[in-house]
Length: 300
Image (cartoon, rainbow, N blue to C red; front, side, top):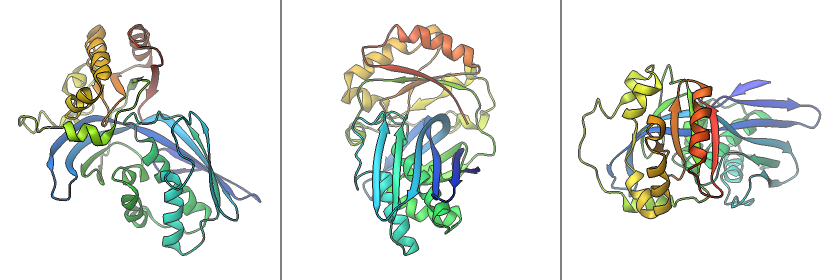
């Protein structure tokens, strides 16, 4: 067993020659939208932590490229539009070989919730196949391939908490991340990232200290929670009024602020202890509509 990526693992078995990787979810503790860039993207600064909520990928050498989806697979394509498929094809092209691998993807990370599942799957594919195919490229050599797949993909090539900037492709690793528990609220509907950004309007300027609570990331959840923010929340709430209504019901429940991760639709609250997160989740569950889910997970 070999540790890789953002806390994932690789298992190699012989003679079948297969690899198994875990792809973690991420949560945006803060998300500042600093403006729109000349290339059409938005300039971001975001504090991201990884969570112990994983997709699982198994790679087995075959004569061609295939992808099978298992688990919570609703809405997940099993063709060349899937980021894991594209990652396999891109790495094979860069190495100069055929993408001869069967990928089986067990989905656990909710789709369209702002938890980065697709990007994490792509990064896990790059790391897993880099080992399976024996190329053993360093992470720095994989980063350009990852960036070509999507802005968030490079983030997942290495473990731990990070500050992401630019379009999201620049990741500054933090020597020490915030350790605690997350109560994730998973609504039964996704939110379109493109639509959320279209609704974004630049917020009034705030002080740099106020916008960078990761400088005090050893603080307890009670102090830290009130300093978290997401500039995309107003846009997401405008796109999906049900999400605003859900946030309004949960925000402040038992004194806990609730934030949105990424461009939505998942919401979260933070806690120091698992028991606290589970107790809050029981209260929050009473406020959920049909089809919504609660997940209590630890940060990495």
